Image (cartoon, rainbow, N blue to C red; front, side, top):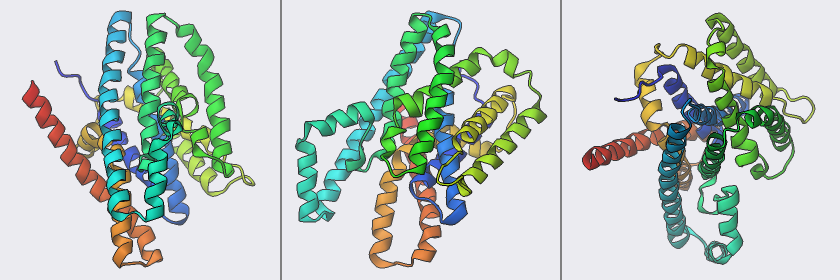
Length: 335
């Protein structure tokens, strides 16, 4: 029997997938800061969903489900890396300067390049910066397999507040000072705290669902407002928006769980359900292609700062829809 979908969560999966695009190609000014905040909040939201799905009463069933998710996402990750690698080779061969080609060859010959890919999800040199998310997710599935297999629920409750605090401190530092974004975009800081929180939400679902809808909605609105204020009006140099991003994502998530039978807008829910992952995976290639193409014949920084992000969003949605239809057709054919 097909699993019943949660329309509200599917709706927000689409919204947050668009937000992730705006992290990598932001709109100008305050709108750009808001879009970036939505995207960062969205990354946490996706990890909340994954952590929530790792909870269940039957240890053996959950271990099987976690490993099934690990294998599925592992295959998707391998395919995505292969596509980005091929894209990088084509870009270097046909559009790169001699110096860029030499640097690319040095990168491929350096064993540390592959170590950074495996350990950090560092795929920047093949245009795959967003792929860190998938690598971190795979590590988290292995961690959760151990948590479920060895019944380490008590450890989850010890680690969750500690790692959430680590996430807040490290992410605030990265957003405030010119340091590598890999310090926060990794399994320990970027992924595991939110997946642990999703697991805790699943464990406390009955109690959390007793919270009234008005309270949840107020929590969503207030935390979102504070998040947007924090990213636009920093306290000195420090970005203090991270706690509000976590609270906003968690409030929306709990609200979705409590109202699982309701819908916001079904066409958008369908896109979130079927296409959000593919939007995430393909948008960086689309940014590179559209940026290079548009800037080759038309350059007006003021206009393009608004037009290019919106164009990338549209093309990413269309590309993801095509990918989704192909995958679904292949799945049906195998079945």
